[in-house]
Length: 70
Image 1 (cartoon, rainbow, N blue to C red):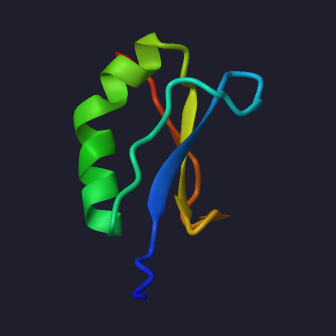
Image 2 (image 1 turned 180 degrees about the vertical axis):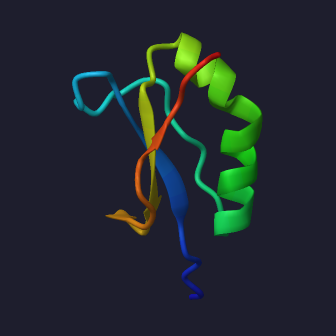
């Protein structure tokens, strides 16, 4: 069995608490995960997401990105 790396986003509210909704899709690579966030960040921000953290196999892989709608 071949295990593929899993990339997904964890979302935090303005108080730094992890949100259980919305749920990130799981991606096979970092590029696809980042592209998806680039397309969805405005919608996520309107759903109460303050910051997004990219996880690689459950471990935070990048600094949190703050989502601010201008």
